[in-house]
Length: 111
View 1 (tube, rainbow, N blue to C red):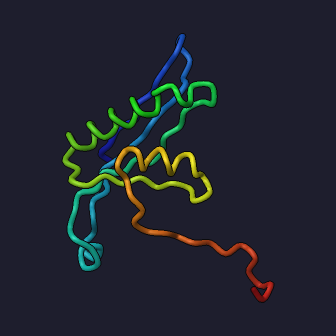
View 2: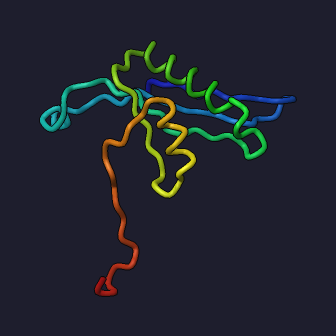
View 3: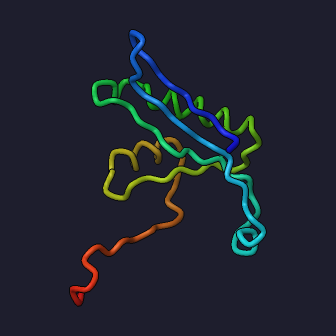
């Protein structure tokens, strides 16, 4: 897919990475939403010792810039619901909640 992978290193060791891609809408997608060319941050990871030191922010800035350059007119990121730190990080970057995907794991128990 059109997109980017950006890696951060320290002393030649990978300490963080981000990946993003352009997510084109299908014809049927356009029936349900406003047509857009979405740039999606697919993954952002920073090793524990480097968190809180600006590495994630630098990678987000670089990924957003690359996706916008590739023609994205909206940016999206998926975050795991229980990961409150990641959710707060993305909110600082201007992302807001849009869709919730809820999961039931205790199927067949009558709940």
